[in-house]
Length: 110
Image 1 (tube, rainbow, N blue to C red):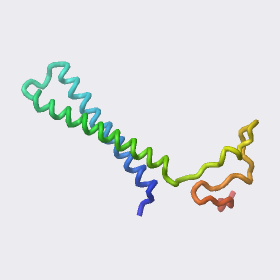
Image 2 (cartoon, rainbow, N blue to C red):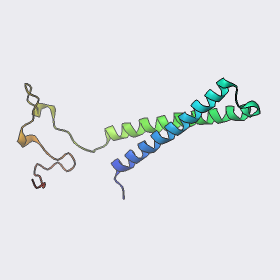
Image 3 (tube, helix red, strand yellow):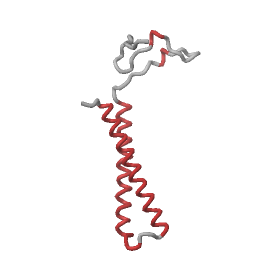
Image 4 (tube, rainbow, N blue to C red):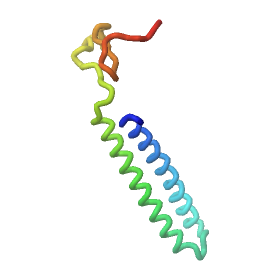
């Protein structure tokens, strides 16, 4: 089963793809209308442009919601500001930890 973080990332990527696709449709329909193309299809295309605009708005809203949830989620933790040296901006070796599990020990082999 996917973690909540992975699910939100997948949902955000999907919203971006949907927004790009629908935005391209809106741009194409508007360019055709500006050229006078479409002839008798103008009424039907008007409804399609409105549908694509609404889909763009929904995709943007979904993306904003995913970003908000990702920022509020208990995902990776960051090093506290007071652990940074005020002059150099560096962090002491003893203050570095895993952002996922919070452990100070590393299992990486150099």
